[in-house]
Amino acid sequence: MLREAFCAGTIGGLLWLDRYQIGQLMISRPIVAGPVIGGALGDFSTGLAVGVLFEVLWLRRPPIGGFIAPDVTFASSVGTAAAVMVRNQTNFDVTALALLTFILFMPVSFLGSKLDLLLRVGLGKIAIPAEQAVLDRNKLQIALYFIASLALGFAICLVAQVPIILIGTLMLQKLSEAWPEKLIQSLKFAYFSIPALGALDMLAGNFERVPFALFLLGLTSTICCYFLL
Image 1 (tube, rainbow, N blue to C red):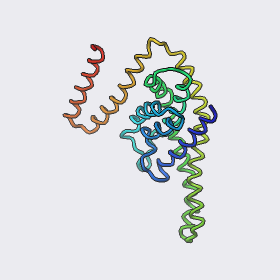
Image 2: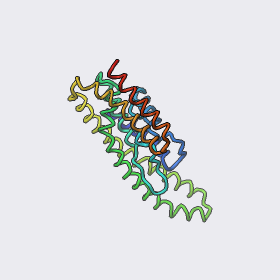
Image 3: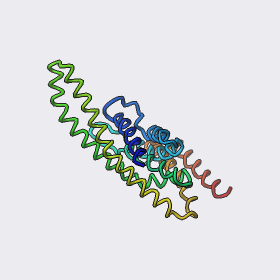
Image 4: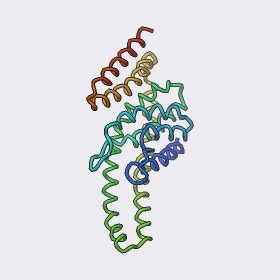
């Protein structure tokens, strides 16, 4: 378990850098981070199932300016790692397990935002001597400060993720074992309702009546078919 947690923490730390520090190629988004970590641990489908749910939390909440959004990259990384390790030990349904993971690890996204703030403070302190190095045109010092800033971000994420993965895996395993088998179907249905609500939130934010009405029609039809067929 420790090896898998360290592997997931390492990948999660590298992807975490994409949020603010380097690239910003959107590979830190949960829809990407989840499958990447899941694939590295041997279960791509579970990673994708978890990543989709955390992606909903990311929509319409980009980290712009001084706003620190819930860190769903952090939460989806540790959640995916825990879900895959539990899935490897049980036959629990993928979508049901993904929903349990989302419920258990969603609060971690707010802890991740605190780490974002901690990182920004640390980068601010590094920026002062780095600015002087730029003025002095000292290329070696500039490169060292740049590497130090990346190492700081990676280290903060790695150190925080590994224990959360280990503890979260044990909690998720206990939760899945205690969950009544008769209620697993309800988790499977609820799993698909969360992306639907995320799409509804996006449509409502755009205030466009036609897409909004079509969405409600499609959602209602899907629910009716589910119960009637």
